[in-house]
Length: 580
Image (cartoon, rainbow, N blue to C red):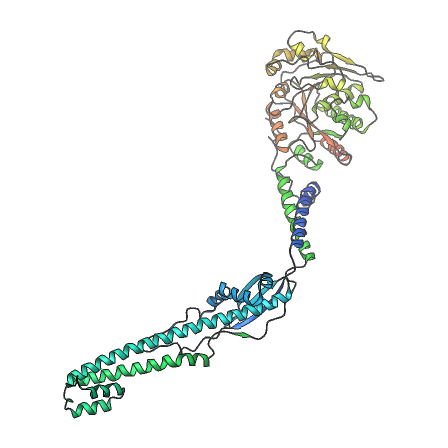
């Protein structure tokens, strides 16, 4: 059983508190900068498009008529439908009030009104009318105009209401008057005087009390009639109500004017205050804080979704945690990244890149003492991560150190080794596997001036169909056995591990595998998948090379390689393996 965990543990990039924040800011500063610039730009645009606003206010006291004025007779109660404060707040903002303001100020000033706010002042029966405008003088005049227009509109409403009450009372008085005339006719019939004009004149002149009428009726000897007595009493009541209703109808308007019914302006209009709102400087400060906060949140989101390995400390934690030693790291080199670039360790031996690969060679040879490795597969999780570069440079630098090295291009899908060494692609590995060429005829030996070592390259050969079937066979084992018989180290450049099974097939017949991890390209999840594939293939030894580091990270990576060289490796599995 393997002692290495399958895949990686939980992502711990954010377990370092403030250090995680500083890391995200350093790496994703461009996200924060974009959001910050957008926030500041929108604020500047809003500030430039918005004029300074001023506010003035006027207070209005809500004074209604006394309840006695609007209480009718015989259970009639008149209720003012716009008496409550909330209703009057709405009333102060109606079109009728606005029309009054428009008439007072004129179109030019009325169009400068930006905002109208009507509120209640505490628990008092007072409303506050506030007007905002870019012109402080207009704000003051508009507040006064709104207060005056509202008071005028309410007084007109209340006057119309009192007129309605007076009319209602007069109508009821007329009804009682008609009822009294009907009673007069009935009394005249009971006394037998329906044709006595003098008696009718007496009825018309007598209201209440009925003393004169009763004396006249008693003289006629009708006092013993109970129906007549009831009619006389009813007539007295009806005529009394009619008289009182008519009196109230005549007096109600006079009483309302005495009580000063309706609202009134309280004091003078306040001076315009402003400019309102926050100052441009404060708005810019708030925009900067908001933009930075939003940018930082977006930066964390982008950082969380982007699991590409960028920093040495993260790579070290992830790789060393699963007991995969780091052989070393290579710097960023534009010459190496060129598609037509040669082998740096051969053409530019005095360079940072050549020095880095010499350090990798030292780490590899040191680790090989504990676990001898004669066949070494170089691969990566995905494309464009530098596996061909590492394989070529590692083979060349080991050969320059005095070893007999053979480099095999087993990437039969996208061969690149022949371009690195500027040799022909054909014949090569596919020719030998197909039996079309002898192995010795396909090996290309490269000169190594000043070195006792030997470097030979086996190109990929012509591209064929059924690549996986070609590699997955006994013929490949025979070719490797023949190469091993005449080499100290065989380096195999294979396709990437994820999505293609070629490297997995070859990993089952080699002594060790080097996985290339490229900074800013290799993803954490994809690297975990690649290590899982190798673990299932039961590869005895797995190493990694960190590709594309800057000078600052390169020194740290070299230190990490020295530390990981001390990590105890697994005991090599015993399996059928190509011997020399």
